[in-house]
Length: 114
Length: 112
Image 1 (tube, helix red, strand yellow):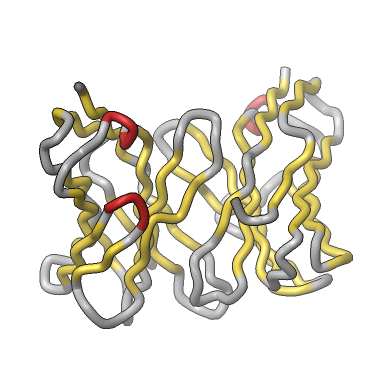
Image 2 (cartoon, rainbow over the protein chains, first blue to last red):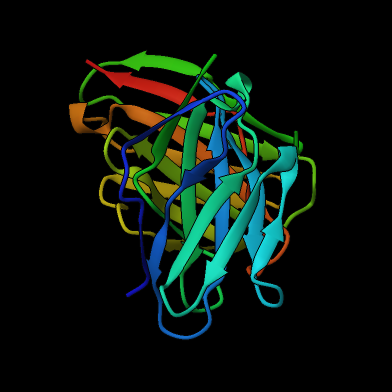
């Protein structure tokens, strides 16, 4: 069965520093991976996805993610964090089959301090 | 934001009563999904639809039913609400099973 894990409940970084939010996955076949962000009392917003191709994927708001097949990881990164990046981040993997179902990680709270 | 609305946005109901949540989209996307979000569990799929009148169960479907009579509307019904169904419910849409999903603003449901 497909699964995804976010090993950190919370990540704290200082504004201006680089940030990394970790995600590891387990799939049979080729992975379809996604990152979403959720601000308080809002729905999830799509950030970026990996389907195939370059291992470094660029997304919205200056975020990027690095796909590493050998380590089965898909970490979210940003070179310089902003206070406004503080939010809840979810990694997800597409389930097998033709339904497009997503399997989500538990979420990681990012706290960026001034 | 993608053209997705959910109604109601907030609801408080009593145990044992039926509840229906509505998801409406203006994007004409084929796929629609209902998730629930609970602390420590991320989002879990309740039901999904891959076309009008075509629906199937997700991982936490017990106690829930769905209907999709039009492309734009996907209804989630709690037949007899229980306190364990207190949660935030999100609808999502997707043009294709290979594409990203776009989420609605959510419905906060409290069952007392």
